[in-house]
Length: 218
Image (cartoon, rainbow, N blue to C red):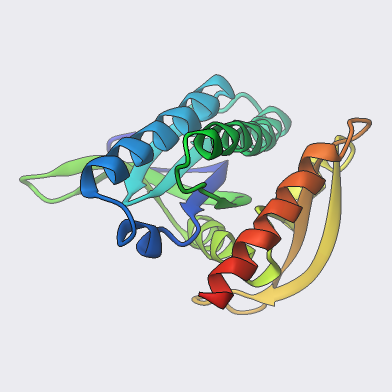
């Protein structure tokens, strides 16, 4: 692994909506405390789902499922879905808690892709870290950003959907060009597991739309 190798995995990116605005509205102490609580709860969900937390990029989280060790394509993909749905539930519960404490609620966007990547020990002679690179990683990052365009909290790519399609309910949102690559990527908004109530999905989407409308009116 230190020399680098090619493998397939599910890559998840998550980012807080409107974090720059939030950082100007509350004190640094409260901001760091709330951010750390958020990151702690998200990381616990990812780890419980069998994921590897790759890094924090400011308020963003990057994680992989199937890297550095795969449990099999279907299991890795299902674990990524399980993490995303768990993060949705955990953040919803946090928002309820923060509203009671009169804190600003947080929303996030999650993008997941499945594909081939290169993993290895990357960096300089003075600082190195285990990292993953490649088109699949770039697509996952861009897809997370597209959650803003579609006004939803979780988007998955077709490459991931084809592995888990018998297990999940989704809404197709179309094909999008992704910066840095040719062609388009077919995307789906993730509702939840097949056979389960869509109530949480619907509630989160309503809350998110209200949040986005408030931001536009500011």
